Structure formats: structure tokens, C-alpha cells
Amino acid sequence: MSEPAHDKRITLRDLRRWAKGGEPFAMLTCYDATTARWLYRGGLRTMLVGDTAAQFILGHDSTLPAPMPFMLEITKAVRRGAPKALIVADMPFGSYQCGADEAMQHAVAFMKDGGADLVKLEVDETHAALVERMSHAGVPVVAHLGSRPQQVRATGGYKAAGRSPREAELIVDTAELMIARGASALLLEAVPDEVSKRVVQIARGRDDGEPVPVIGCGAGPACHGHVVVLHDLLKLSDWQPPFAPPAIDVGSQIQTAAAAWVRAVSRGEYQRDGGAYHLNPPKAPETPPKAPRSGEPTRPGVV
Ligand code: KIV
Image (tube, rainbow, N blue to C red):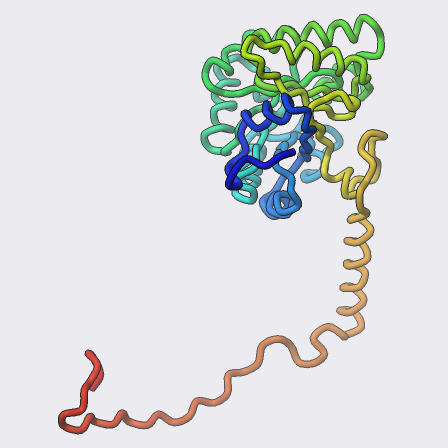
């Protein structure tokens, strides 16, 4: 993943350049400014403010309750933490299902107030007109296909998508439709690599030769870029999907740090040496300023 010259802000052009040049790019979910700052320092240049924040930040059991004002606020926070990263804002459930005008207002809010570069929608073929309208309005859309967690109540649970020939065909056809209607990128969640390969093939074929970047989330190696939930990578979640093995066990480290803190405080060891702050030493009695001798230079305001 080659950097643009002079550490410039990452744009959709960089995503396309990486996709075209066969340079796989890394994306993670991010929900706050501090984490965004550290992720950027670690070399991460693309972040998704995912509606999984409803689960990992707010403690819900699905993404459905993610509130629009909350998603907007955390998008702003991530932007403040990583001013040069490419940021995708996830449109939460209910923010684009209640009419095209309302969907447009929410998408524009993510761009104008949130500082997002793109918005992500979980789509099927019925969203084609909305994707087209957003794209024409200057709101770049990531069309999320495959497993769609916002459908969890409708489907009765989470599962991989595109494993049967019929399902695979539907995903490929919908990807083609979304590209035709102006989607700027695609995200494939939990689909077989064979399906991703076909979508990447379709995404390559734009008139100007620029590919539409395909981001995989457990969608095999064919995708141009890959995203997983940060809390899975850090083992902050209690369970990780098979495609998101933890890189480090931050959960246990937090637990160890908490235990050490509790131990130190409860044993009276904390600040046993008297603490960080001490009374100021008594001030020396003030001596009256000497009057300047005649001819001696004085500074303005000094007598
Ligand atoms: O919200 C999210 O975290 C996502 C990823 C799982 C792709 O949509």
C-alpha cells in the first residue's frame, strides 16, 4: 500500500490506485478519536466507522439500535483523531430506509458534519435508485453486499452469503447493478472467494479503466482491500469470526491492568509516598523594588 506523496489526505483515488496496482489495502472499524490516532500511527490509512459500534461501544446485541446522532458524533471523533485517513461512515439501520429524502439528509450530514469520505449502505437491488441519487449528489457510496447484519431480524440470524449458485448469482448481479448506478466501492461480507473473484472481475471493467475497489470482510483473498472489526483483532470481543483472528490479546491486558490497579488501591499502596502534588513552599517576603539611579535605563512600565 504505497503512500501518496507528502502524507496527503487519503482519497478514493488512492483506493482506486491501490486496487488497480494490485496493492491490497487494510481497513479496520474505528469508533473514537484516540484509537483513530493510534491506528493511523500504526500505518492504517482507511477506517470504517461501523454500526457495529452499537455492539462494541453501546453494548447492544445487534447493530440495529445504532442511533443516527451517535454515529454522526463518533464519525466526527474519528475524523479528529485521523485527519488524513479515508473514513467510511456506516449509515445505521433506519437512516436510509424511511424515504430517499431523509436518506439523502443523513448521508449529507455524514459528509458535511462528520467529515466522512464515503457512506456505506447495506443494499439489495431495491436500493439502486438511492445509490444513483447519492452518487449524482456527490456522496460516494460503498454498497455492502453478501451477509447484511441489518437484516438479522428478517433472516432470523447471521450467516455467510452466496454459497448456493442462486445466492452467488444474486450477489454478482447486484454488484453489477450497483456499479452501473454509480457505487464508488463495494463491500462483500462473508462470501466465498469464488464470488468475490467474480465481483472483482466485474468491478475492473469500467470505461475509464479505473476499478471500483472491492473491500472484503471475510470474503477471501480476491478482494482489493480487507476490513475486520477492530475489537476482534484486539480480542476485546468474547468471540471472533473465523476470518478475523486476533492479532493481540488486549482484552486480557486490560483485565491484568484493572486487577493490578484494584490490588494497589485496596492495599493502600497507591501514592503511599505522599502523592503527586505538594503544598507550595512559603513565599519569601517581598522586597520593595529599587528606584533607578539617575541616568540608569528603565524598561517601559518599570519604576
Ligand atoms: O459495521 C461494521 O463493522 C461493518 C463491518 C463488519 C463490515 O459493517
